[in-house]
Length: 113
Length: 113
Image 1 (tube, rainbow over the protein chains, first blue to last red):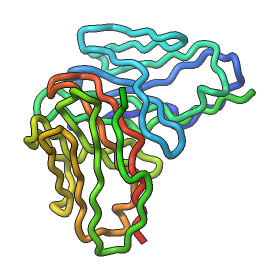
Image 2 (cartoon, rainbow over the protein chains, first blue to last red; image 1 turned 45 degrees about the vertical axis):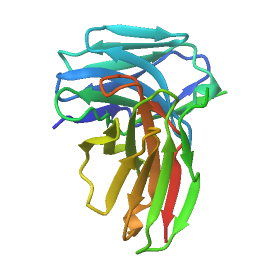
Image 3 (cartoon, rainbow over the protein chains, first blue to last red; image 1 turned 60 degrees about the horizontal axis):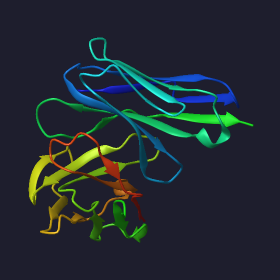
Image 4 (cartoon, rainbow over the protein chains, first blue to last red; image 1 turned 180 degrees about the vertical axis):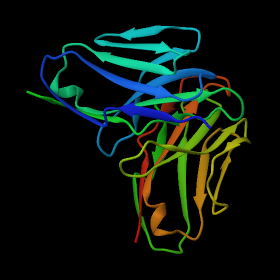
């Protein structure tokens, strides 16, 4: 059974700091990994999608990497801003069976002005 | 283009009642999935539908059911509501069953009292 873990559960940083969020998964047989952002009480916004054959994806100040063999992904946020404050969720689609997303519990990020 | 739309946005029901939640996918998207997110947790997979057929079911009781219509919109039905069904219900759509990027709606907040 695929399990996804995100560390840390919460993170508080001053504005301008570069930061890394971690995601690990137990089974390397995945189709892809997707990072989402969720504001309080809201739906999910897709940030980056990494196919299983890729190593990283970049969008603006965000960079996500994938090491499938070790079951790890990182989301790097450069020059953090207060508007980046949200919960960041990592999800994988396991190979085989239905194409469901398996989510971690998320990392709650607070960027202080 | 409109994103994934869900209705209603908020709902309060009494234990034992029935509820129907609705989702309209992005135009052209044929796959719709439903997720339940309780406070402090990552979303949990409930159902996936593709071309009006159920293609996956998560570990939820038979009180939960869903269907997809010819226009690819979907309904999630929950019977005999329990207090523990209180959660944010999220709908996600994608182009095809093997499409690997999902777009989420803003969710329906269900409170069971």
